Length: 407
Image: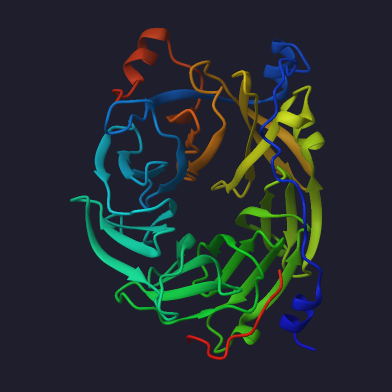
């Protein structure tokens, strides 16, 4: 029996994912500030921050996705009003605003090897390429092989900068992974057998152009070798997280490749790909203990990033509807979560962080979220109050079978 057939026989998951909408005035730090500073050994400070305003000047949009350019000098941000904005990484000075998508923008990525080419996916069924120098769209990719555009939920570009992959919602009982040559508007082909529900993330390996990891609301993470000629041959591993997948991050250890998987239940799982085994799992209670907060119900993990030294950092925090919150960095130390750095600024840490981007070269982190603010976190001690003011940027199911498959 093939892996695809085994996957189809497994039961789907079902759970309540409404886990962030909790009111509480009781969440506080579990230790005093002096102890907190000792527990979190690395210093970071807010070097620049920016409030994102809508074109009408009304209440700010929230930020859903961030991407850093290959040279780590530029930042792309997706806003909830279907727009994209480009910023200088070091100052958060806005460079361009770009519009064109007619529905929710679901992903953004720079094409490796070229800071001037950006791609974005949308529920409008398109992947758009943008020239970051002019802010103009240069190409539109779509898949109309079923006589209608498939709503696209995520996107990535492989390490060679040659191929795009986007995931879809369920379309006619199938969830698709669609592939394009970056130079052509029509798709090369796709996979539709490996996931049973909407795709939530697609991530190519940062250096291996043929390795692709995908996550879905069906609870599975699949790992593919896309150089193979068929979907069945391409599928290298199927990892059952038993929960809806939010994001996946590749990282390397001496024993091979691993994945850090963030779930929609705010859990974090670590997987060894050589053995296809889960090596660690951190629930909300473990996250709360690691960030030193009293209430696990309001704690969350946003995503993970690998540093130039090989460490894996998790962006974690806590937030309540009353505006109480914190933001911290945790380090994955084997099968443990250990405190790494406090991200402190009363103006920005109250928002729920929806997206982050990390610069391995400098250790800097940019976060954005539901408060509509971008913040550049820089390693090192906080500058004086006058220096800090100068650092501010200006405010601006059941599966059926088709009679005919599209590829």
